[in-house]
Length: 354
Ligand SMILES: [Zn+2]
Image (tube, rainbow, N blue to C red; front, side):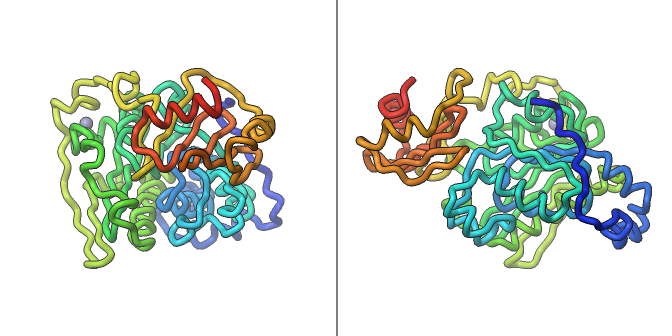
C-alpha cells in the first residue's frame, strides 16, 4: 500500500476561502493554520460512533488526507450513533471504512479519504499507520489502543485516545516526549471482560459525539500548529450528569512504553492473537498468511451447506450451525454466536478451509 493516496482534486466549485471562512476567522487557526491543516495527514483507527463523528469533523475542517482503518461492516444497531452511515449501508453490509469514505467524499471532495477494510495488528501497523502526522483512536478495545500507543511513542507521533460507554467517556491527547502516554495512565490493559462495553452497558450517542468533539479539537490544535495549547490532562465527561472533569496525569519513569521503551504490543509479544474476542459473543479470526479469497466462488460452494445472508465486493455473510460468519476478502472472519475460539476456528476450517 502506498503511504497515502495522491491529493484529491476538488470538483465541488467551492473555494477553500469560502468553505473554511468561519474557521479561518477563528484567530488561533487563521490562514496559516488552515494551510497547515490542509497539508497534514491522519490515520483514524476504528470507525464506529467516535470514529464516524471524528472523521466527519476533521474532513469538514479541511484536513489534507485521512486514512480510515476499520474491520467491521455497518449494521442496523449502529445507526443510532454512527453518524456517517445510512440504512442502505446496513442493508448492503457495507464495510464501515468504505461507507465512511463514500459519505465523506460527498461532504468534502477536496480531502483525500482512503478506506482500509482491515484489522490493525502488530504485523501490519507499519503499513497502515506509516506516514501520518497524527493517529486517532476510534477503537473499542484496549489491545488495539496499546498497539497505537506503542507505535506513537516509539516514533514520536502524537495520538489521541478516546473511549465512550453508557453516558460517559474519556479523552487523553498523548504527545510523546511532552506529556504522559496511555501506559503512564493505565500501565496494564484491563483484563478482558472486566470493564463495561457498549455491548453490555449500552451507549448514548451524545456521549460518543462529545468525546469525538474533544478529540477533534485536540487534533485541530496539533495540526494547525497550536499543539502547545492542547490539553495534556485526562478529560472525563458524563452527559447524563453534565460534567466535564480534568485529571492531571504525570509521566511515569517506570512506564513500560515511554519510560522503559519496551514496546511489547508493537513487537507482537502481547495482544495480537490469531483469534480475538470481539464484542459479547463474537470471535475474530485473522488468517495466519496473506490470502485473497474469491468470495463469489466460495458463495457457490457454500450454498448447499449454509444459508447465504449477503455478499458484496468486500465480504460474504453466511449462517451455519447456529452462527453467523462474515468473511472478508483477505480471509479475516468475524464469527458471531460463539464464545470459544476453538469452535470459531473449527467452523472456519470446515466451511472456508485452512
Ligand atoms: Zn508512558
